[in-house]
Length: 464
Image 1 (cartoon, rainbow, N blue to C red):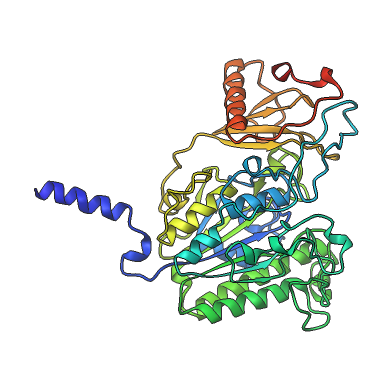
Image 2: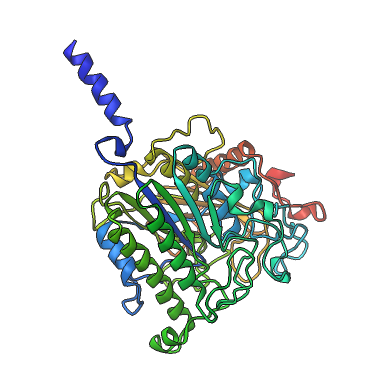
């Protein structure tokens, strides 16, 4: 009887949320920046001249994810995947808003044209903010949304379809989130209908940091979740004059410093409020960098590592041991179940979810119970190699499904991190298995296909 009671106690403990062990419900802060690739933060050790000391502070206090991936090589699909826990292919939002169905790649005459992609996040889809609201959390969205309609830069205020703004997905408040994919102005007046002008000339990132600080201070005595998605470091590159001068008249590096200063203000406020110990803080990016990384191939828009890999570091002193790292691949859909489960909620009834809870990694596990990650980008994009196509990542193996635009490719990332050598001829069984796996996944999520109708010669034999 004692043996069975012990088993029951162990089973209960294994599935009990962290906060039930004598602590209060944990808070969470999700910081996702824009167009920042690996190699442009100092915690990955690639460039000692980069000035991001607060990210280094997070790395010292928490865990670095050396193989973090975005759900897409461009921004809107990744943002949708984070909110819903669903892949861009399942949502039907597979490129940045607005999409361009029918567009063709200038380098591939007669090749397939873009698949359709929706221009807003459907309201009926899951949202981690809604789930957290059910659990009694105060929630706020601050920053870039880019999931609410097309043509925003032609508007006066970035508002196209306000019914798709963050406040309709479970966020109590929304400051800055509209249809904009980039700010119309980096300085007040911001020309943003969801962010009131207040101090002429104030830098946008500073203002968003102020709003984040105010939210934390106002909600420190109750469980809260803050989604802070700054517009840094998206083009056009603009920064305050003092930071510009301090960074050798380099706008991009000045924007990095401004971003890091904002993160520092958030960390300082959590500490001053006495809640940092039990607050998960995530730093992440929405896709690979607009500026390429020296030790990865390609950049934003490409399905090579430089377009999909992103910097990521997390802190949660009550749970995560400082100065640690993991090489386990993770993706955008993983944040939904992580935020909900750590807060005491369940996702059992949300059948659409494709992500996994990251808690085992936070507690020191070597890997998740997952073999593969998948991508689908049925769109043409000039200026990068390997844009239209699909990907299967299975540990060290990466298979690129060329969709008829380019030949299929197989890389071994452990031996060839720069993706220079196609080993498909020496590993045909591996390539065939991964191709079938990718096609099965595409079918399971009902992914939209590129349009091959005008030139059957370009259609891969498997799709004819």
